[in-house]
Length: 116
Image (cartoon, rainbow, N blue to C red; front, top):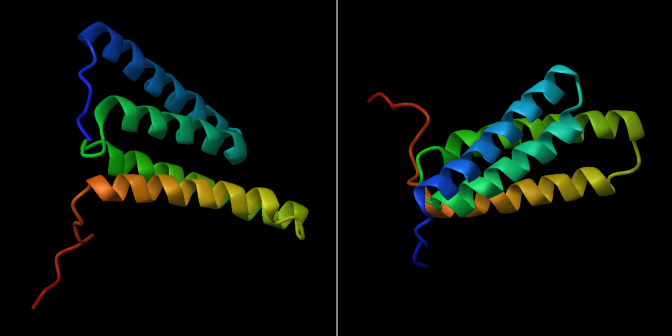
């Protein structure tokens, strides 16, 4: 699929929105609201994908932050609500779908060099 070219100023505005979502998510994480933070990181990652495309170098790091936050939010939700798995499952499935999209465009790089 060919990537559409976004005029510079429009792209800058959209990237500002990404940064605003990420900044708000960081504030929410600091407040212990990882459930809402995960939603902001999700939105930021979706915007990055649509603006920059699947192969952009910033996507793996953004995906990692979303994954960690969503996993923590699901863990907290399960501890607080126990038997209600529905929302936690939905959040993790959504995160997995985004990770699949990001990994489709990213080269697989091992996390460390294996010796020998």
